[in-house]
Amino acid sequence: MKKEHTNPDPETKNTAEATAEPESAAEAAAPDLQAEVDRYRDVALRAAADLENYRKRMIREKEEAIRFANAGLLEKLLPILDNFELGLEAAKGDEAAKGIVNGFSMIHRQLGDFLQSSGLQPIDAVGQPFDPKFHEALGHEIDEAQADGIVLRQLRRGYRLADRLVRPASVIVNKIA
Image (cartoon, rainbow, N blue to C red):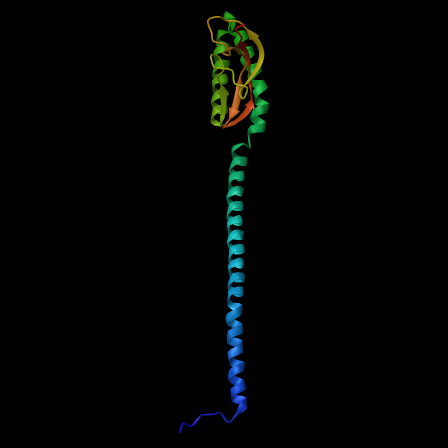
């Protein structure tokens, strides 16, 4: 005859059942906890990416601020340069002032070199198609030898600083009727 093995202590049986319940409760909560861990990991990764993007943007803005720091000063120098060029052109016709004109021409060249080394670039407009991004049309003339929309004359030189327009060139554009 088989003898059944029974546990005489009823508390031991209850302890075994009680121990099994928390394990199954922990197993049941594991997917929820994993989902929460994944969510926090995602939040942390996004925050790290946002911080890196912010750092890159700040570096880019700082470089741009340094590159265009002189823009205001250079823009204020342009009318002085215009007047200097006008005076130089007017004086070139006077034979008695030839020595002075040569001296001022050298100063003009130095000033132009300084402006170019500062990043200021003149816009060459004559003979180019009219571009409203770089040119300001002050009038139209007719020249049958040129195509329609070509800049015939430049009244005031335009300038760019790196890729920014400082002042548009004031031009006369060919308009064929």
